Image 1 (cartoon, protein in one colour):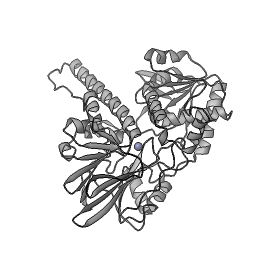
Image 2 (spheres, helix red, strand yellow):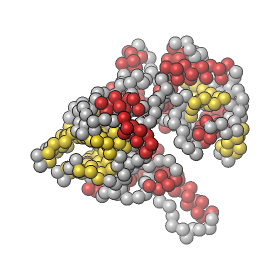
Image 3 (cartoon, protein in one colour):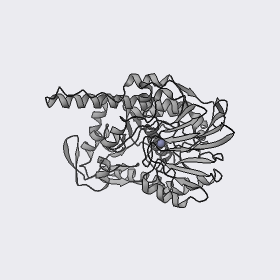
Image 4 (cartoon, protein in one colour):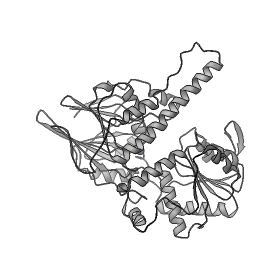
Amino acid sequence: MRITFHGAARNVTGSCYLVECQNKRILIDCGLYQGNREMAEENRNDFGFDPASIDFLLLTHGHLDHCGRIPLLSRLGFKGTILTTAATRELARLVMLDSARIQEEEARYRNYKASKRRRSQEEAVEPLYDTLDALNSLDAFVDIASFAQPHDLCPGIRTTFYDAGHILGSACILLEMEEGGTQRRVLFSGDLGYNGRAILPDPAIPPHADTVIMESTYGNRLHKPLGPSIEELYQAINTTIARGGNVLIPSFALERTQELLYYLREGIEQQRLPRQLQVYLDSPMAVSATQIFRRHRECFDEETWAVISAGRDPFELPGLEIIRDTAESMALKHVRGAVIIAGSGMCTGGRIRHHLRHNLWRSEASVIFVGYAAGGTLARQIIEGAEVVRVLQEEVEVNAEIYTIGGFSAHADQQELLNWHAQTGRPKRTFLVHGEVEAMEILAGHLTGTTVEMPDLHQSFEL
Ligand code: ZN
């Protein structure tokens, strides 16, 4: 038995781990590398294994950095089965098709640029994969029956999914394997959520395991509590609306947008926000994702069920307007005193840039950042206090009020990671993945009674 780390090794994207047992090859996640151009180029490198040789792919959840290389796997010959939850299958479909479209657009743009430079003899850039590859890979998906119910992959190899509480349908995955009289229980955390979040139940208590592969995104940090963050959100909205400005919220389409709608609805019901609050959801992807949430009520927590049982929709507000059309989105420049939720979360693309151009220079407006902003992104420049920024080829003064509200993370923090790990019953070995080196090293210092490894890319270990 052996495990090899083909992604998210000493960084936070590109999750991909290969387990070999009884001549079967099982992949856990096949995510895209994201970040700067160098990182993105990593996606074009060899997987480190032959895609055609993979029998099963077990998918923890639908975030791009966990499912985003599946269409490429399919393009390069993968013929196996992809097992995951029904909600993850639907979210992965949306995410992979969106990613394919972006890959196609980027290749077209680079080819256009090359032709402008009169270098048409340059080799044309091929997209990493296209829409057809994404559609083809969907045929391989099979839903698991439910959480905590074992599923035999073959005699001697069994898998069980447990609720990870990270995004809709997200799972931790246990592999129970037997080979030549040796038995192993290997547990993959996937990305972990934490207790007390909106919409999703708390992460399930994990099963005992002898080997644990654990994410470490926030291995060196503690989150701000959620309660004061919600209060700050309401206060920022009330103050801005009162002075006639727009509130822009750059948001990620999956989970964060649905959480925002959930909290806005609660705020209105509890009379902490005005009943006539005008909210525009200007992101086709977020609108589709919200529809997927509505179809997968089996993933909701008790509080969300209570809302549904009372005859209400958890994501519906009296003043909510859904914008799909580009022209309608453009027309929002005439709107005042409204909340506009649009992608992308880090302002690197999407419709939020138009709204920033029309609002950032207005002192009565505000921008509320509710998610992570990587270095070098427009979001990070604004958060760090830039006085002038470049938006869509235009210099725009930053006069709007800027809020950074940190309590809405989808990931467990250091203490929550340690609590989860303690519940796995003193595993002999722990592999830390999906984290920057500094976060991993600090987390490793807090893990006792287990041998901690921080694998390099493509490094193998006997189990
Ligand atoms: Zn994730």
